[in-house]
Image (tube, rainbow, N blue to C red; front, side, top):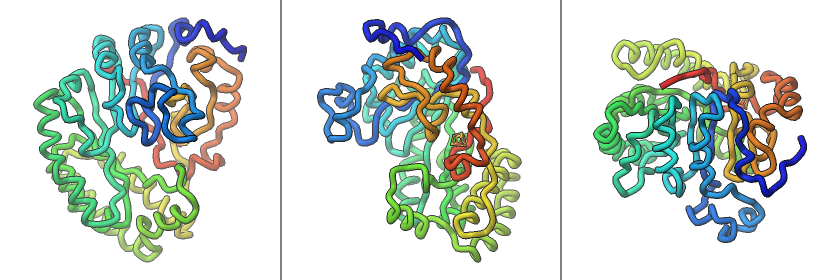
Length: 341
Ligand code: SF4
């Protein structure tokens, strides 16, 4: 790719209308305060070396959304509500046939009345992985109230729970499902905990495995129980589709089993590398949050990146079964399909 002249930035991010069905945007870096969108006030040495997209990026993107065939936009970040242009960008997205979602943690809603949530379609709450009773109580204490507030602001908002399953969660599955339902969620998805694709060092990883992964013997006995629980619960709750949930739980159990030496972890069925882009706050673009960088919006437009030889080569060479990342990926996005409001 030939870099764009820097004086064209950021208007050169956008060119002709192109298909990019799913776009995931991380709005800030870990531990960042809103002020850190200004690169001159970054705090740590690591952050000082990063160059961030300007805080108007999302707004600018929302203004130019018609240039792409985008169906889903999902916003990430440790504190996405702090993003300066969020409210205005959501208002622009709401006027277009784009499905807008946001990933957040419980108790993360801003203090002020989040009126602009009526411009969103889906909220994904990340729950767990729970290693004990305290974490469960803390998570679910205020969730029913929080979700009631959200529903009063936007009755058509879809509110989904993404449960990162752990040993403790499997042993308390019936109760956890009950708590998720009581909190008022529309849907429940089961994911493996993110043990490998993160910044943990080996000791921290070992500790996570010790705290979150059931033993060999437990896996075998839990497996019998949880199918009964899920099937029974399926008759009583609207929270999950039994087929999808079985696939998700099989993956979780395989993931735990592989860690404990019970066979191989099967390759995931995931479309992310073909139908999505993940944009980091620094402008780096990947096809999913975990794979290698295929371009940077500071030097190339999204269209250039989507048509680049680097991307084509990456897509051609990505083998989900052999990639060192995919088999332990907690994500796997089989559901990434075209979707309209
Ligand atoms: S399985 Fe995970 S790491 Fe692999 S392409 Fe899909 S989302 Fe990315």
